Image (tube, rainbow, N blue to C red; front, side, top):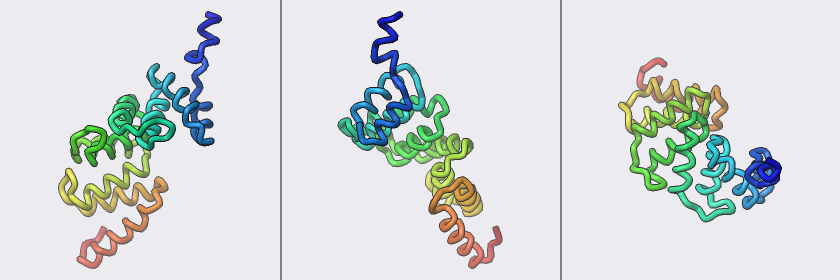
Amino acid sequence: LLLALLSGAARADFPAGETARQLGDFATAQREFQTLAEKGDARAQYALGALYLAGDGVRADARLAASWFKRAADQGHTEAQFAYGQMQRDGQGGLRADPLAAGAWFLKAARQGSPGARYALGAMFEAAQGVELDAGRALAWYRYAAEAGHPYAIERANRLARQLRDLGIRR
């Protein structure tokens, strides 16, 4: 027991990894996150995926990032669901571009309050990307994104509302 307590694996600490990441000590962050991620910690899985996607302290590897994001997303981690959806939408990390599947991940994240996922759903409905064109739904998702704090959503919602109004459509 004492040996287990003294081992690095037993001391893995998400806050320590996050602090190290914020300070630019990516080697420490990777070490902390890796240990926890392998034990199933969704926060660490997402954080490790983000390191691999950005190449922060590790060789950039989109496939590995997608794998870690998927593990965390399957556990309901909101940011991982959004990140995995983006990779699936764009066909990154060895994933086949699949807007419909991406939309399903965005919806899961949006239902948990993700501003980015809500904005992405608005864009999908506005551009008919994997879904039927639906300006009303696009506008609603942009408004939900704005309520959740997305920085560009209110501008996009207002622009779309003006376009609909100019066409004589009230929303």
